[in-house]
Length: 457
Image (cartoon, rainbow, N blue to C red; front, side):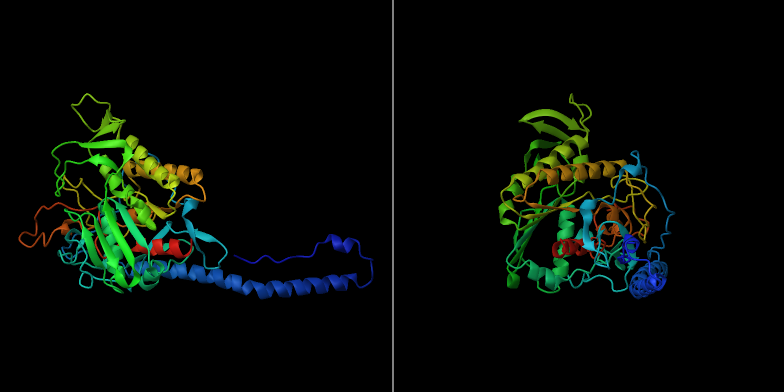
């Protein structure tokens, strides 16, 4: 920002006596003013020029560092626009709630969630060999993915620098504290990313897991820091009839007016919480309120009113945020927005795939209507919670990762959710995962943002 220079009020001169040297005085005044202006301007011009130069070099770096195609020689399909029934104009990716990072001149704050992915030669902070905590479905390199270009990008907010995650600083910040990730498998995906980074400084010790290894607790002994993941895909009370392979034997029974006690009973033990959901609400479900069936979502053949997933999602998110606002426990809450998938030419169950090898640029892709609806509900309910909160309530922070995730079609496991899928047959048809993230991968940048929101609130 160019510094403003205080100028003398011209009215002062009208009260002065008209003397012969008035012109000389005015000339001298303007000469001094011009000199001061000239001395101040170089810094401002230098900053603007530097920013422009930096932006330019970042753009050229992206061109130079564009990763090669995948080893299977899949060709990069042309830019496409996903169908969007709702106008993209209704999707605002620059909410003021996201402004939490100082710009380079220290005067303004920028939106951490609006920007672009830029090439980064330094690469990830860990590998699948240096971290043994990666679940096999996200261990893309071990499973045979041979291209590595997707590892060499970092998220760059528009107008400011986002520092890389500092694991030592984070562990010091979390000394004698606890942090819980609450939600579905995306939360579990995310907590693995954080664990892998932190374990480069101090190994995490697993001290608990449930029967299905979906909920876990780790300890970092020398920092007395506890990190947990609680698997509760709906966040509210649900009876789920689905096995570990995603096969359902009956419809989910969803209680829209009751939170899942699996996480609410533990809430007061947490200093920090990251919570989010979304995709499970698209599944067939029977809706209950006041212990009575009131409707459903996608239940053909049943004599029930189909309210749609958005009805249940709004109820659930509103209930969750209201719980935080009304609780006497003052924790710091990161509310993560929905994560879009990148299936092309089908869904996960119908041959959909994601074989892109570079990020999108802004404007090259739009959200599908389902994700747009979900994010709209999240922003509306979050705004309500913030406005109704008090100083005694939890600190609510919006972790709006939707847009930056939308730009990374190259970071998913794809067919490499399973070990060596093409070892026996190069043309094998296998199920793709275009929702979760490879580790290392784009989800690592979410931790950069979280840390920045913690140290520079």
